[in-house]
Image 1 (cartoon, rainbow, N blue to C red):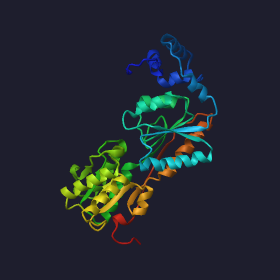
Image 2: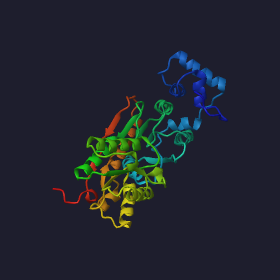
Image 3: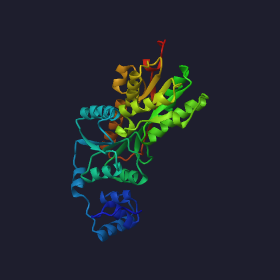
Image 4: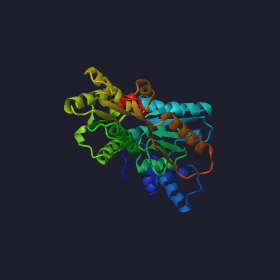
Length: 344
């Protein structure tokens, strides 16, 4: 596999030179017995040939009782990530550990993660909202520090992710049961696995119910703040829906912040919620409960806490364990924004 040109030799270069996986090089560097003598010799020869020098600071830190765990995520200002962090921080406070944050940003997130990890060893890593390539997953799985993924999935790593398709389908089915026949969706303008799954759930519910469905009824805003999950994007998308689809009476939003922006657009033109337009969001952030916004509850704080505990147990255990895969089934919290009469 070809790597970008670098001014110094990396673990990737060693793996390529020896013809082995990155995880194998990592095991040799960390003195693991789970490597054959012949393979160990190939790796050691590659290290000698390339004059590779591992990060001694990182290796020494890894051998110490560093009371901190790291979390890497695309943003720590968006409501969804904030809810996750609350759960993670609450658990780490109980076990008296510090939290290191890596802001992956919106561009070349994998490169940002590698830079963060190369600055020094972390005792354990929570990787939130970043789908990983097979190469990166292999590197993380074979590295000296355990890694737990949240909001994405790979068979080599412990994972906590959501059934986004099922959650979206549940939300749209609710709107259909309320008698709505023309239902639009507000999506992010930026594609992601979770976004595509929510679109698939919307379509599945509409097709099953025999409702009219067209891709033009799936609308995105133009601002694309926070990856398209913002109040501005929701407001812009709702303005488009009002203009193009006067027959529309309900909207499923792929995030609560989009739904909040959509509600502002409706109020601006004098439309009542839910009498003129029913709204359902996704995430169930704290603000939604005060606004009476129906939303798909992802229990972000609880999942953040559970994932942090999973990581700590792996860090604390000397015995290797097979990766665990946890799929969360979101529930729908029904509030006034989608029902016109009180529920019994």
